[in-house]
Image (tube, helix red, strand yellow):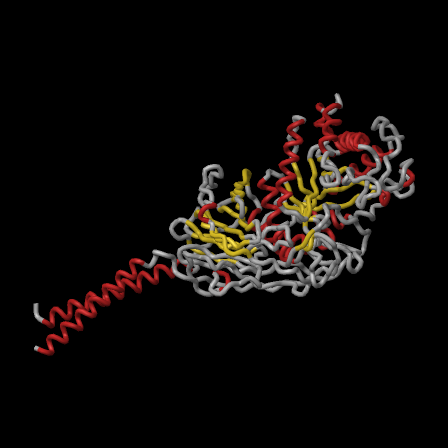
Length: 607
């Protein structure tokens, strides 16, 4: 071979090596590019398992949220204020019911508040006079009222009736609503069940909402009375659905639902469980600050609670979940506000969190996959043509999870839905960063949850699908929980781990602005829910997804804890260990061949 031929050969090898290196780099970077095809989502529909209490106050927002059910108070003392011949139809406006039917929204009526003329005890909470008389006796005033209200409102679309509210709360305690005994409540329910079913074959009777903490033994005592009634078994024990009210400590959603199943099993029952009230009111909302000794909750945490509560409830086989509530009306300044809309109708981040829950969970099928590890939760929901997973950190430490992929790509979405991105799987998994919870000192609400949505050809087998290996989870240094401060309504997004060995370049998504709503109607004010003594937390906003080459991006809503080079801030991360080994071989070969070529040239010139 001549010198010229040898030089051409070496030059070709060097150029080929460089081309291979560039190609390898492009292949790696392709892992974070946005594919042209995204998971197909079902068309907008109303799913009756998702509710918001008193949605009628803001009909347009309720329609936008695709609320599946509403709850309206039917105060007996307002509908029949002075006697059994009264009939005040202005207490519950038919326009509210018309709007609910137009949007296929189920309405539940809550019957309570004894008028003074109908009881020998105190008004509102007193046992109705004649309660133990036959249901067709005119002296049974409660039976007469239930018959009239059910017969009137059934043609207007109201078939679900909740019989009273939190009867376990004793007199003298905030939230007290029923002065009778548990046996009296059973009779109240028994009468309502028989009368409602007689006047509306479609009637569904819900047990009064049980707050648990005021009397953890109440449901068991009630069921003991029910199963002892010789007439009960032939009449479905005189109720169709068990109702729970759960607030603030999000993991108690799962715990109390499971305990309710256990209590039922002890008495041979298996009634559906609905959570009709759940929320964590944000007392640290800078636009509506509230002084409260316990449960310091900010706007982010309220949004995170809503996502986590739905996952925990459905994961424990609850049939339905309802948020208390859309908006607080007639609330004095500084009053405790639970609404996902503020009293002035402006939207909190929780509004968007609820909307995101419905968008990515509606039409799911049971069973729901559940994985609980020491430091994270992961839930899996089968939906038409897709699978949605919800993940979050349970404690204050930031976390990196290696999540087995079900498809070639996934849509990753923040808690409030304002940040989302499609990212491809790499080597059969996604790597997801989870922001630690804000704990003060208890972690009553988990960290920023992440939705992971994948298109699939058929439902996954929940029992056999690969779980996240907790041993592969990387726990970063715990993020100090900042002292909650009502100074910022929203925070920017950022993921959070400095210990990411297999990281890749990440992408930052631009969050959408928070919208504002309008006016507030004036009507009969409703009482605030009762709950266990409250604790603290911060506010929700956009979350940024960090896409990694070997793995996937993360979402978070805590900008304060961003770390330089972290996947959440949009900056590149260190390449995955071992992943660039082939490229380094090519680089080494190119350098060696280049040096050899230079040596040959020098020697040739000397000759």
